Length: 261
Image (cartoon, rainbow, N blue to C red; front, side):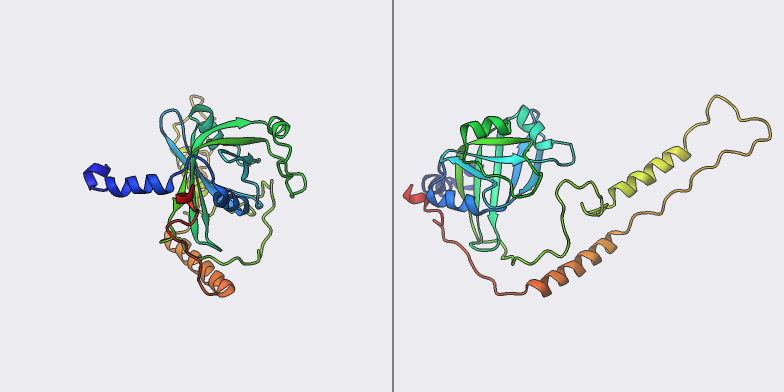
């Protein structure tokens, strides 16, 4: 593709100057203060999944210049990322600093699942989780193959604001987890009701003179896309009023000092 688009020389300069097989000092400092990242995995067929991980600074823990680990907590029970990693060890992490430096870091490597006891036996310096009662079910260890910068050009500046609602860990309260924000559950209810209404009669006939069985009415349709957009617009206006502030940050072409090794 580089040859087809005429970018081979430019790409080679990037490989030579920016792509490392480990985390240098500045990269390790960057990782240590991050509170979130995006995780990309794929199963043995190449079917992809991308997800979001968050925690206090240090939850993405550098074990060595060529290895890091992050905890896996109780979630929706699907375990899409862990399932993919169990079949295909290749994983990609993207860390973005929206608040201070407005720079990003890509980390690609081979991942494997380890128990909390196993990892702590080898790395007793692993941080203890500050949330009472929350403990990792397992950890994911990533042996690093590539680490390189994600340029600042299109990373927005975001300002931190105080939380207005509690987001409780481990809750199964749908409202606290976001409810049916995209209307998927409502659509499933409508679909099941329509399937029930169209289901063929049972082999056993009702007694003579018995009233026909009642067909449950179809639930009202989910809110329209326009209603969702309006709610998102109002939420954005509230956030802008609360967090209005000057933009800043940015990063140079050698933000992590990769050219220096």
